[in-house]
Image 1 (cartoon, rainbow, N blue to C red):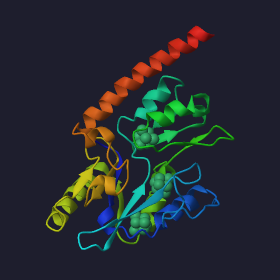
Image 2 (image 1 turned 180 degrees about the vertical axis):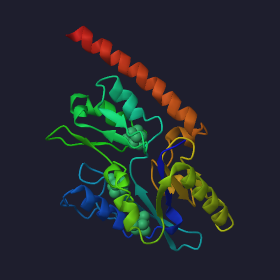
Image 3 (image 1 turned 90 degrees about the vertical axis):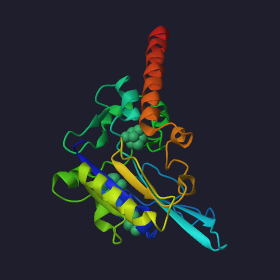
Length: 251
Ligand code: SF4
Ligand code: SF4
Ligand code: SF4
């Protein structure tokens, strides 16, 4: 599979949030007022002003000492994106896939689609809607930078080597190699997304300790990722057809 991909090695992530800030800077996104909600994670969630969020979770380890789990959350740039399936049924060109990189890009046309249907279609709870303008937003893979020969801003700024970006095949190789390296120390380690996403995470413990959407819910039930995404795609197509029929009937 050609195009680009990210390999996010959470075993090297220190939770410094440099990637989160770099994303805001490059995309010209403003800071927002936030409240202390009892976590070092800030802000509490993704938004139209936060395309990348380093999620924090704290658990007690076997020796009763606290263990941090950091999860730099962003759009996974699915190879067959369910959000695009849903958008295509409503408005052509609302979501496009960049040919060179495989980035899933939201366009202005998406304003004409039903935003809730698009957000509900994403299995990773990524897109957000600006309630004032109706615009939807998420990570762009920094295609503007990548096409100019630069790394995505979040990758460029990461000082620990946790964020990596490049040709998809190379990222797959890098992820598999790193998994082999950490397996002895972390027997539960796994890499997610190798089959059908453009963002792979190396997790060294149970996915739910990182984030509710670190894995597709269906995968946690033992259904593999490809089957889960295909099933979701079929359900969405059916739902989109029903919506079109419903809309026509109500005109
Ligand atoms: S910049 Fe790197 S180390 Fe810092 S939070 Fe982001 S991924 Fe983790
Ligand atoms: S992660 Fe969600 S928003 Fe991103 S491409 Fe996949 S379905 Fe779309
Ligand atoms: S690729 Fe660009 S838009 Fe996406 S999270 Fe990184 S900095 Fe933000």
